[in-house]
Each structure stands twice: as C-alpha cells, then as structure tokens.
Length: 377
Image 1: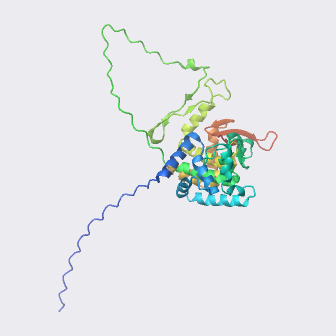
Image 2: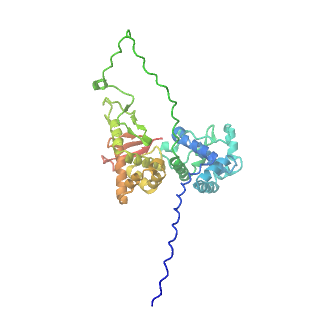
C-alpha cells in the first residue's frame, strides 16, 4: 500500500512591483567661475573672435607667475587636456635658450608694464602680424609687438604645433557649448480693434498692385532671399545673400542664387560637411589655399569623429553620422569630396560662407582645373 503524498506547499506570495527607476540626475552645473568663462568663450565664438579668456590664463599658467590662477584652475578642471598641453609648453620653453629667460620671475611682467599699463592682462597681437597672411602658417608670430610688449600669440605660438593644438582644444570647447537659452517671450500687447469708419470718412486708398517682375530687371539689390525653410528649433530659416545683383550683368550671373538653392536641397548633409571642412581648414591653416584631397584627408583622418560627436547640433542627428560614415573608407572620402564640391557647384571662384573656393591648374600648361579651399578669417 502506497503512502499518501503530502499536500503541495502553499504558493509563494506575489512580490510587490519593482519601483519605477529614478529619473536620471541632471548634468551638474559648472562652478560659477567656469560658467562665467564659458559665457565669455561663447561671446568670443560668436562676436569678438578673440580668445583672451583662454589664452591669457594659459600664458600666466605657463609663466607660473601666480596671476589669474583661479581662471587657470577652472579651465584645468574643465578639460584634462589643459594640464597635459601646459606641461608640453613648459618643457618647450625650458629647452629653448631664447624662451627660458621669460620663465624667470617678472621677466614678462616688467617688459609689458614698460610698454603699457594693464597687467596681468596680456594684449593680443595685431592681426597684420599673422604669419599666415604671408603664407607662413608654420612660423610663429613675433614674440613682442610695438607698444604692447609680449602678446598672447607671441608667447603661445613660438611652437606653431603646440599653438595649433591649443586652438583646436578651444574649438572643441566651442563646439560643446550648450545652445543659449531662448529669450523670454515679449509682454503681450493688448490688441486695439480698428475703429469703425464714420459715414463722412474718405474711402480707403486702393491697394497697390503686386510689383511686376519686369520692375526688377536690371536693378541692383543689396540682398535677396532665395529660399525659406524651417531651421533648428522650428525657427524660420531664410538665408540672405549679399554677393551679386539679380540683374545678371555681373559675372558669373546667378551664382549666389545657385548656392542658396544647393544648400536648401542638400539640407543637413551639406551643412554637416561644411562644419567638417571648416574644422579641417582651421587645423591646416587659415587664409591659405589647400587642395580638396588635402582637406578630405584631414577630415577623414583627424576631425570627422571629433566634429560629428562633439558639435552640439550634429550630435543630436545620428542619421547624419550614419550617412557620412557608411561604406568603406574610400566611399567615405568620395562622399565628403562630393559634398564639398556641391558647395561651389563648379562655379569657380566663389565663396560659401567662410570658405573661399578657387581654381588651381595642376601639372602646368593648361592642366585640368581643380578646386582649392581657403578658410576666411
């Protein structure tokens, strides 16, 4: 006879539902001094185009004179690349018989105070001293300038390679800046209903008929808008061109309208390629011509990933990265070259925003014309 099996154990109680995951913590706000410096950097990127807020603290940190130490510490906490680059600058100065004396206490201070008051501010160098204007972008700026003493560029460009790395670091910071907050909405203005006309009021003036197209023929206009679209954040996007008249009498006719239409048709891909080309030209050197293959090579080898992942509005567009990165390296380079060529559309010379396109004959004696690019300052 078989024993009666024991009754089954009671069911386990249902566990309580898991709590909802905590929302992600907001990004910590930058310290107050760093927030001020970043706002100055935003102003430099959009208005002044002078980077004293970075270059002056960096120069003082290089000289180790104790000036602007708080600003230098804020930038060092913002990016570890600051300290690494500063150490290489210091090694370069210590190894140079010309520059090592500048590291002595008050050496730069005494010279600059003799030139003009204002220490610890260090003046920027005059733009006409830029060696790139003479096609010598691989040379340093003059160490001193008349009436200014040692300048920002004079001190920091003595190693052009290190100065280029410093500029590229600042450019990365620019690209990572969050967009500025939108302006507050205007105060609502009460709408006054139109007054009803009195019986003895004169009749309204007749509307003027639309301006016929023939009225613009041969007219020279200061600016015109060719395309209108929706820009970032839903804002109206209306590119304006000031380069040519609509009369067609200035050669080559209609080119400004053509490049506006090309930008409207290519949309985000062309604008992304433009950002990449500007970053590459900045690394290669301002105000001098560079061949299209050299620009494409600089994009593919150095700046493609940095710009696409660090630039704020491009980082929010993963489909652009997928489009530009798709395929083999040869296909990526060909796609980049095609987008850059679309900026000039074969009409050389021409200017697309800050990039000047020109034709350069290769091989001499009627060689095939190719595009060269120059970043305008």
